[in-house]
Length: 323
Image 1: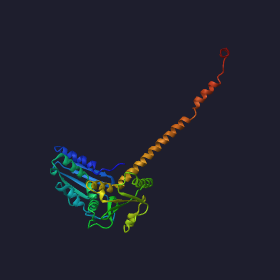
Image 2: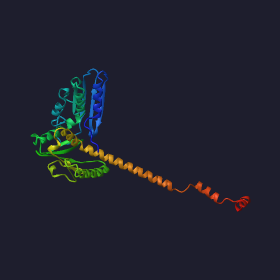
Image 3: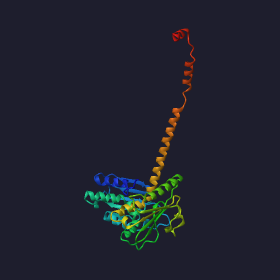
Image 4: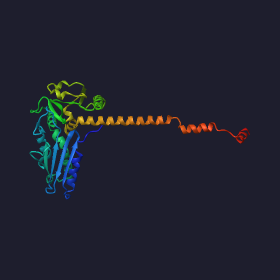
């Protein structure tokens, strides 16, 4: 199974090209769209070669989520902590975007290895911004506390007009995903995939993985959530995260994996559907080949065979055969 990568390849490649070719002053104006409708707009002008503008558009949040000035709570603090003085905010951001950052290329680390790590972090701006609330909750879990300004049930956006829910506690954090799909085939495949996903947790060697459950109806933890947020045609998936899952460097990977869980499932559902279509086409082709081999000879060959069977013999042929 594949794990989606946090750095955007589009952003990382542009940033690396710009930093590695400082003398190539070419005007740049690029747009990119990632999964779950996350959009990027990066700009560079030769008139200001030390700066780049990066704008980010996030998925449209549903009513139950809490956004401040178009961003999830603690997002601004997370961006400042991640990028420091290298990045400045434009207020207001560019039209159609939730966040616009002005990147000062002269303030990048001078060491090549540190510089590359920083650019990778900059290309992971989606994780920094959208994952900020979840990171705060899981950081407090590592210290076995609950953030003072966090509600009992927190809704976090991860897809356009869709959210997943977090129940923070001092000893564990419970995450619940209402799984929704538009295509009826995807619904069937996703339901089967998620049930197998839960069963895989019980296999040998998975004892340290987070607890995972699937149910067709909303879990009890979602009492009090809006009714429209509890509609899920592929059921509900529940993860229970303990402090051991967020220790040290595990935190970044855990945040990203939980933030993109629906995209992870969607990817494998589409792969399964494509695999089955390929198998079906191969099966049809093999049946067609079998039918072609089973066809009788053509009419022409039949006529030729009949003509040869009823060929009239002359006298010389009769004498030759008799001798």
